[in-house]
Amino acid sequence: MSQETIQTTFNVSRPTLQTHLNEKVTLDANPGKMSRFTYQQEIKLMDFACNRTDIGVRFDKKQFLMYAGQFAKKYGENFNGGSP
Image (tube, rainbow, N blue to C red; front, side, top):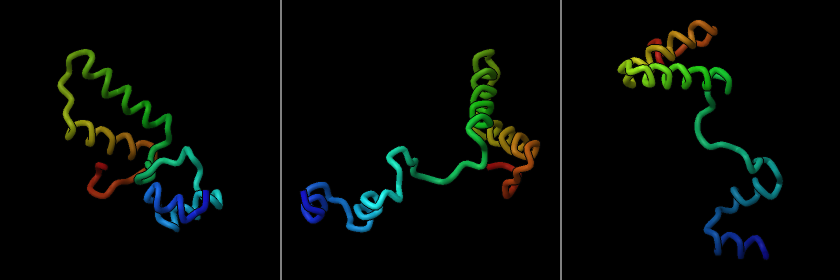
């Protein structure tokens, strides 16, 4: 299949197709912003939130973001305003 056919059939722009053909992007790439936390730190944050809700402690978004800001500060990462 030619590149032009792929572009029209799958509605893919030429730059996107070229990027993938030249292997500049891997198939497991994730869209969106890069996280300031490592994967292990994100797991720890999620475990904390899940544990609080499992024992019946109310834990809303505001409290979670406040805790995430404190957690980030503990590991030397700063957010504007103190929370993500």
